[in-house]
Amino acid sequence: MTDTWLDAIKWDADGLVPAIAQEEGTGVILMMAWMNRESLCLTRETGHAVYWSRSRGRLWHKGEESGHQQIVRALRVDCDGDVVLLRVEQKGGIACHTGRHTCFFRELDANGDWAEVSPVLQDPDSIYRNP
Image (cartoon, rainbow, N blue to C red; front, side):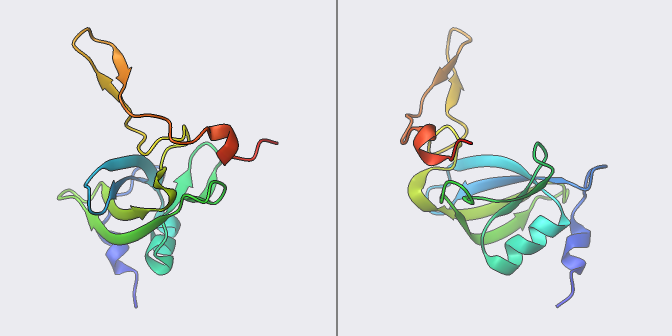
């Protein structure tokens, strides 16, 4: 199998593309991260979400520390080819490093404040190893 499918992606100047993880079944947007060619290839090959961590400067296998893996059910690209959508099964029900189901847990309220609208499901200190 060739990797010409990757040529349809419009990579940015750093060789990255935004990737949105959407929960299969509910349609909830869980998170946004970045992918490079290698992470997108690995995601397709393994069926598990692999992202590029800009802060760590390395591949990031979702759930490598927390165990909250994302099993990829479908890969899509938008009409312009500059955003990837992963339809995923979220293992453990937690996608956010804050211990919430989704990273999009703040909503702008009528007063112009960002209100937290999703509960913490698990204390992050109990999820991640602290050196």
